[in-house]
Image (cartoon, rainbow, N blue to C red; front, side, top):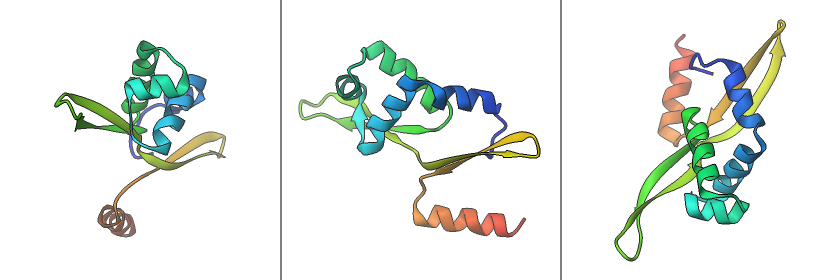
Length: 115
């Protein structure tokens, strides 16, 4: 990963069964916290705790939407395509492949080639 977060924190996050349920729910389509709670049969406070965990590690993102009645709400969606964890020289290496648009992917690739 590009950041320096301890691997244990990330593994704890994706190792949490409830966090994985929430992540799976928002991987299918963007959903509000209430929709996630109903979809996963979880309490709203539990969903919000897991959303915060997942956002902390940039595994999900949110966008503010406007409902038909004019109220605003956040919709959450997955922010990665894949996670690869491997053991390399007695250390774990974790790589999270984030969703990016094509220009961002090209820029990242170009930057990596220049190193």
